[in-house]
Image 1: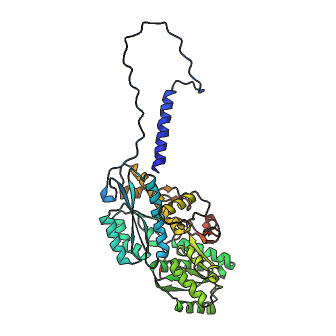
Image 2: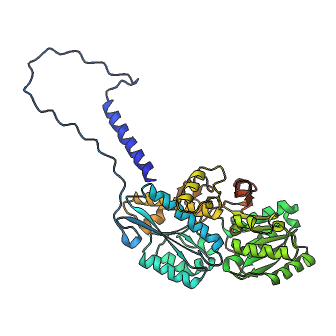
Image 3: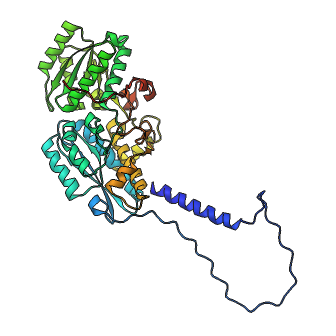
Length: 453
């Protein structure tokens, strides 16, 4: 960050002065011997002593304004797009709050490059038409430098060509799907759906005594990412010798799942289904879990995507079902012993989001803000701050303060193979992993690009 950079420059400058003053020191570091006294001579005519050179203050790194790319004389504009009030807001709003909290703290500490971060979140309510309008506003009217979130797989798919045309960097969207691996503008730090499916299969195998004993039924939101995740789960389960029965789809915003529960019960009776994989937001997950409890399906465990790894699943869901539920995610909350813990809690409070530092999607958004800040200062080293220079700056490694695995988008473009199965820790009120990230690393096969039949 800028203050650290200033301290480094000041330290290097001071070191240079000291080195110059000590240039006649002996090699062993002792003081040089004093010269022999010279014979006394008449004093020369009095001359005005030269004024001592003023010590130059370290200069803050600067870049010219670039208003067409969101860099004004006073601000650096960064956008966020997603669902703040619609059917998946129970997941996505925490992501936005995390980024907002990071920028609140960064601005309190002086911003960057002599400017404040201007955070511009837009609510699409999980609606593709709204998203198209918001995207135009952010890119053409506000002229943002980058996005630190882009919710909804149907929205990512729709906007992909425009994102590439505009050279708009997208940092850490709340899902990683196949189409995001095709271009140059996505910098994902959340495990790809293929990775999450691999991890789910590994978790199931450990529960049922081997993947060959698994009989799995999927339940997914009726959106492109729901179909993609189900296809990857089917591939992962069947590759290991298990059985994948069917995928049941739930409409976004559905308040009941009676028909799906009839099909799930039939799968249990006819095929011996012994595991459910669940795709969706916390809101959708709670509807499914309540549906299972209502019909008495309480002995079939659930492993869900990152949207299910939310505190509300355990605090609001039926205990008979949530006791057998885990959600996959790629980040750690502030109740875990990580470098970022105190800062996340402090910034959440500063932004008015007390308690959200215990939510995994908040941690994700917070990290997105931190990575953006690092990339801005790295891009500025080129002498300009633009979408193009920021994109290039993102192609490298970044500090994560322990929130997730190390990020290196030069070695692993577009996504991170980092994940674990999470549940709620009642004592702290935060999320904890069943095992460390490293425990699951061997589960990821690194194969992407699945045929959707």
